[in-house]
Image (tube, rainbow, N blue to C red; front, top):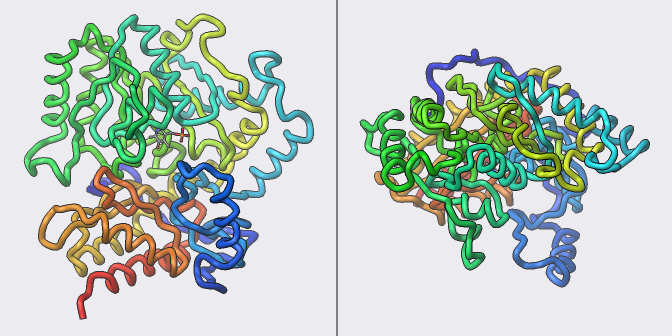
Length: 461
Ligand SMILES: *Cc1c(COP(=O)(O)O)cnc(C)c1O
């Protein structure tokens, strides 16, 4: 389900200047000897619970390429999970954070405030959807932003319950694990989980009945909310406007607006988790803009600061200002170096019109993926928006997920020098999240490798 009637015109993907050559070059087998040696050292000291998609170690990254410690140059179609939209070393971001670090790295905003935090808040209040009076509070990670949005909603409404959706991903802390849908690897054996979280059916056009509209899918969820929880007990609905880890699921048109309208009518806080979708990724500043939604609270992180850890909750002043002083915050939240990086990142996003580049990436990638679907017969669905695109791999002629093929495709693409991430409740989705500064040549080379790998793995001699 790729946006067909586009509110935004497709545009070109002009090549930008980069420090590193924008080429895929392999000088060793992957992983190379230095990466292998680091893997040995790592196993002795790094907890096994931290996984890594790829067994190579980074040495440098710029634009659409990632250099490993063995000198291989890989095409990055993951952006460190949708973080480095401006690239991993944009010179303006690097200069801004170095300049800030040379003056002060930390004071703690709760002790001695500084302008950078205020400027980031000004920009987020202006940039997020909705004309109403807004406030912002800064944190370090997406999970922390989500936790705090829920705190605010509960305090402001005086109600306990929170609704999350099937396939949702909201983080790995205790409350956000409870909000996250998938057990393995995120929740299994980590309970007990936070109470008063209820899960409702999502709109998943590829797997829903073909005639189920977005509005009907929303009514299905609303009717369960009303019978199982009751709006009077419900503080908030939290939803990713396009689901990330759950499989890049774009809900049917009308699903989100119907939920938002119902939430407004019943005094339920509508929280849009834009941690993955925000900051130009989907071809708009925020994915909720595609259906002209004005969420009460928006959670943000990932793409916000060019790779520096920063997160935010922005939303209605009448909700956020209800919280007593000292109720929100943290030692590092809105760190000055991260704020400087965010301000530079936002400037670069405007200067290079990264929302337009995301749309251009969609217009280049989607026809290639559609052709590949027709040719191989193992792609059940091509979907996404902007530079947040995915293919869902299935057994030919069915909609049965094929997670083994998915794993094999990602592994083989990696060995040919393309960094691809998988996702999905059923582990059968390959997602494309290139840096938004990637050039057309590198992007088409990367997708070309994906195509060759899929052909090689599905054609039987
Ligand atoms: C990644 C993600 C989170 C969690 O962010 P962290 O910074 O990893 O804590 C929350 N929500 C969504 C939609 C995400 O994609």
